[in-house]
Image 1 (cartoon, rainbow, N blue to C red):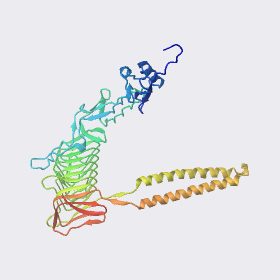
Image 2 (cartoon, rainbow, N blue to C red):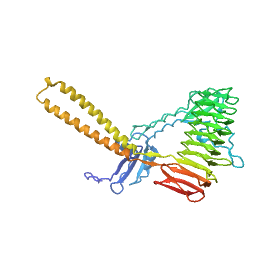
Image 3 (cartoon, rainbow, N blue to C red):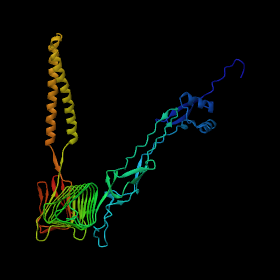
Image 4 (cartoon, helix red, strand yellow):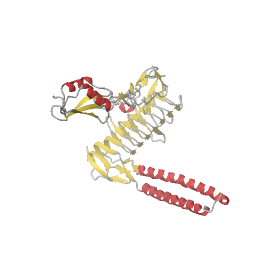
Length: 468
């Protein structure tokens, strides 16, 4: 180049710095400004990254390769942040079964072994019931701009410790404090102490009233009562006696009520060989072989499993599903079955309107109190007193009208309820004439002597007869 000549402009390489939307990945995109541009050096690229705030997680080897062999018009990853690590949620591993996990044992003939008492899990003192994995804290990350990226901490586990249990090993192991029977209250384990009656409940023992579980080796005889704050196990027969249990009841040989007025009240599940001439009220499910001439109210399901699987005579009221092989008898014995209904309301809308009404009622009370207080200060009030009083009175009337409107809307919604029947009757073999099945006021009727393999259920306001 001769002296005095101006050098030609050398084309440059444009360095564009880009980042991902979460700020965790940085890119460089090279663009030619002309032919044979001056290459972008490692130093220039790092300078461009720094100028754009990218200071963490630089991948120098990638930058060196890009400087040595430029790639144009494609963004190349040159920085990577440190991702946060979320904490682990606490977990509980149970070593005892919940009620829902229990499966009855069947013999080779397919009948249920009602004498098997494994349904009630008996544990020893210091037996391990559960292990607890504690929650862990999250580890925060760092984005390419050097800012902290928060991590989610693990959610704490729900403690399984209940009555007569204790946590050991820094709260990671739950053990039993005594010999007893397992009872779950949601996710909490209670160990109920057992009152063992090694004979019948009769004149020698008197009535039984115990806060924990009760185990009777013999029968519960006529006229006697067993009251338990937990589960009840009877290895014999319950005659015309009363049982009132807050937990589950297992009766190996069955219930023979004798047609008396005593009642079996179970707030959990009832399992027994049979039910005859008895009055039964069960909040959970019923599992038995057969039910004859009994008045039964069941808020769960009724499943008949065994050699007979029969319902005949009496009156059965059930909210859930009823499963039987035969229902009724050839002599057309009257057998009443009522599927209980659930009233369906727009509770969400009613709750919302009720909250709005209550808020307005509070506002009305405040305005009324202020109106009363303001009216008492009449002597010291200014010239605008009457105008202010009129405005307050108008506001109170407006709020009162709104409350009345909401009350009318709530009452209208409460009148617009429908009845649904979630339960059903499934008959695996024969349903005889004399069986009366009601869904509320609606009755299912059939013209044949019997119907077979049927399922009776409610759908869209109509009783449907399906097949099994």
